[in-house]
Image (cartoon, rainbow, N blue to C red; front, side):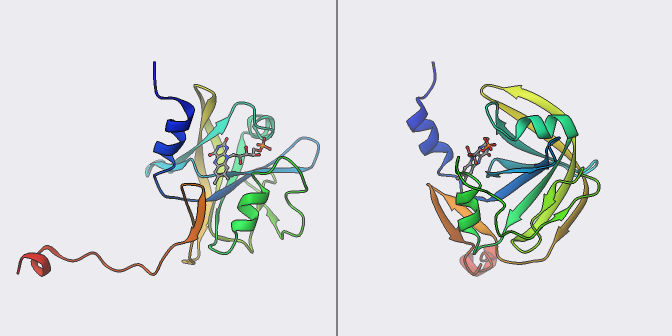
Length: 173
Ligand SMILES: Cc1cc2nc3c(=O)[nH]c(=O)nc-3n(C[C@H](O)[C@H](O)[C@H](O)COP(=O)(O)O)c2cc1C
């Protein structure tokens, strides 16, 4: 028993997220990468994050073999890359500029397209239904304060100009 796939997508798709491209370096010397929004902080000490990866993913062997990956947090104007890295056809890395992560075994850091990144070593791979929950220990990271790409109900958007939430005394006098 449980909700059907359509309702599942509608429910979880109602939760706005950022958008990342998770990359790894495969044993054939070619980079791999896919669009992922199922990314979440796990632990501060030690610094851990997770992302969820379909068991059928072409990225899975590279991540499991190297035990390493990079999470590239996309900038607002890079919806095109998010679409490309979710597509089954085409050269995903065409025209991108990247730097190989030394600690993450050569996984590409998409330096021109991101507002932050995390270079991770794989700590745990937990089977969960048709996905793996991959937990990474963040060895190196960066954050440049730029505007992130967001995702909600199959739509991309730039994070809007944020306004501070009102204080309690402003509402109640
Ligand atoms: C916004 C967005 C978020 C996605 N998030 C995930 C995700 O978290 N995990 C996942 O396995 N697939 C996710 N996908 C789907 C993959 O990007 C897509 O299936 C891709 O083709 C997989 O490539 P691969 O088989 O080369 O790994 C997402 C797609 C989009 C458009």
